[in-house]
Image 1 (cartoon, rainbow, N blue to C red):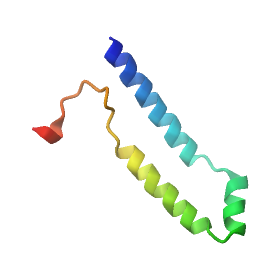
Image 2 (image 1 turned 180 degrees about the vertical axis):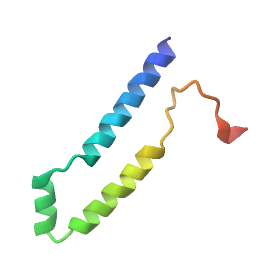
Image 3 (image 1 turned 135 degrees about the vertical axis):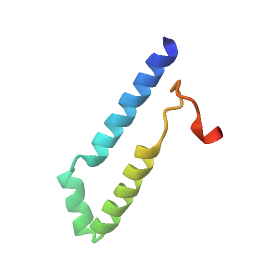
Length: 68
């Protein structure tokens, strides 16, 4: 049960991180636009979203298919 609790916490943390990456920050985006690096910032953000989306929960009790 302890492992499941850790797995749930990890999943919730991952979801909240992704939500924070998706949520527009108009002030920050305005700064990036003014500094002429808006496209670069969004590109980096998209790469981070893709990376985090693919992360597997280290507390999951699912079999590790990549080792089978």
